Amino acid sequence: MEERKDRATLLGLGFEEAELRLLGLWEPAVGPAHTLAEAYIRRSNKRDDVTTLREHVRDVVRQAMRDGKSIRHVWFEQRSASKAYVKREEFDGAVTAVLEGLSKTLYVWKTDRLSRRGMGQVGLLLDEFEKRGAWIFSVIEGLDSRTGRIMFAWLSERAREEAKDISIRTKIGIDAHKAEGIWPGGVTPYGLICVDGKLAHGITEYGFARPIAEALLERTVPAEIAADYNGRKIRTRKGKLWSAQGIINMAHSVSWAGLVPNRERILDEFGNPTDKYHRSSTPLMDADGHPVECGEGVVDYEEFLTIDGIFKSRSRPGTTIGNRARGQRERVAIIAGFFNCPYCGGPMGNGGTNYRCNNRINKGETACKGISVARPQAEAAMGELWLNHILNLPPESPTIQNIARRWLSYQDPAKEKRKKTVSAALDNAVSRQMKLNKEYFLGASKMDEREYENLRDQVAAQIEGMKKELEELSAETDLTPLMDPQALLRLWENGGVDGRRKLLDATLTKVVLQPLPGDLPEGEKAPSITDRMLVHWRDTAGRSDAAEAMTAVMKHRERQIASVA
Image (spheres, rainbow, N blue to C red):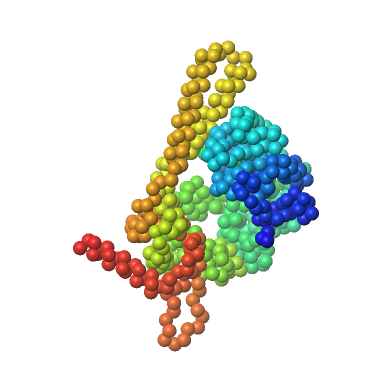
């Protein structure tokens, strides 16, 4: 019998085989969907150690046994349930298992472990479960979504408000510590450690970090420093090779100078914070306009400004060289991001007229011997291989369908943006509905019954309209017009750089450029670029040789000429 897919997770939580057998979690659970269930366990904070998490699993399993269910899979993750930008793969996996009919029940230890984003998200999830005769059960609250949907709504909104309070308290605490010159937390810069809330020189790393600073002050280019350290087998904190960009990023950090960084969080289009920050090389200033120190640094503030000035002197206006504020330039390389070096397995980037190994350029010969190929020839060969592969696929191929879906999304970004807008508005409307009910039934409001019913009906109509619009936006678009390989060929020819990159992304995972053979027999030609490109297609189908590729492309072009004539 095959092994349970979640066995490694359960053993990682500290369960022994004997206990897993008693809990029915050692062998795979089998049976009809109505007898099976998914268990979602989420660690929300550091206080939830593995002992606590094991007890959560036991509570869920005991409840499932009382309900006559077998746990098909235990989904465990350490993710926030309140941040919209955090993707919860395990939660999505548990939900997908129920929606696909593998089981009919989703157990959670407590409602706030399910979601802290309010009834806007939980309500839609319950709607989808009800369509399939499935439900959610919260063990601690003893809450069944089939009979306690209103309580689910109330608890979900309460969890959402708690998340807001936690966020406010955390931000106030971090800001207060930063103002007092206390290290705000996180990974310390290379060469430094945190001791009692202050930065201090690290015994091991500082001896290597300071020479980097001195070399930068002497105007040595970062690539030369990286190659020197790699050649002397001096590794980064994580045991990896040094890169020029890594040294630049390190020197740009004000924390490397022992100062508190002044970082601002990036907001999404609705004004909500994300997990990304604006890259800033400015320190936090006190009331007198002086930078706030949080201990020792590898460089002092004057040296930091000198290094920053050296970097700026090398920048070129209108280019990305040394210009951190310019943003991302328009792509011109079709295969960048898919191309891999055969020696180190790393990416091959755009070198202007060619594709070349990034590790060789940024980390030196110690990292990789390197390889390069002319960009026009490589992109022409990639086009031939892609066209041949598509022509050999049936219209019902998953790859053809995947291409069609991605292309529609690429062609209609407004629809995706509208889905996000409507989803956010729905969350807001459901929150207002909960507050209205709370104010009328539990608050000290003088609102009369007619006014309450009028407001309630208005909000309910808004929610219903938003749900309907969201359902329409989420409906599958007719992909038939794009599922013809000939139509996809026309998309390639007219797609431009961005369009072709979208088509490649939907079709393959990577391309490895094979090196030229060392010694060839006299009179034998070297293999073409097309023969040297090993493509990893998403549908796992192997590629045909160059002759077949050229034949397929020529037939397509002949058909085009015939149609014009």
